[in-house]
Image (cartoon, rainbow, N blue to C red; front, side):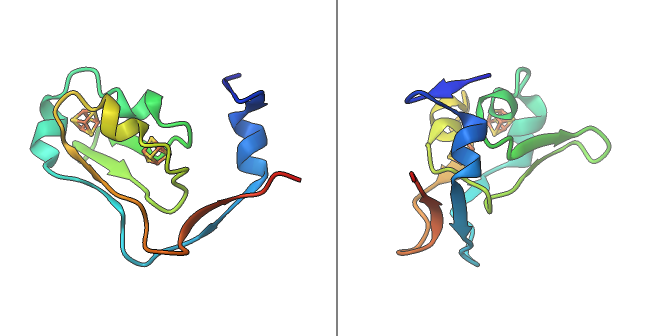
Length: 98
Ligand code: SF4
Ligand code: SF4
């Protein structure tokens, strides 16, 4: 189980809710690049598991709604193929500690 600041990701998710922005703050720039990306590290690096390779359509599916705004996918993508920014003001993840 992965730990961050003494809490597991599961613990953090349980204390979290989201104000969903109707404007995505994450998107993949070019699916063709994902097709050629051999390791696809975004799938394992995203703590919220928001990236999932679809073998049938040969597309990297992703979902911005449960994003924890950690920025890992932006850093881990070896091809600079992820656009990422913070959601609009007041939207996105809301962490609750207690
Ligand atoms: S790491 Fe980047 S290029 Fe590779 S599959 Fe994920 S988003 Fe696509
Ligand atoms: S910012 Fe973090 S939680 Fe959000 S999609 Fe990227 S890796 Fe996943």
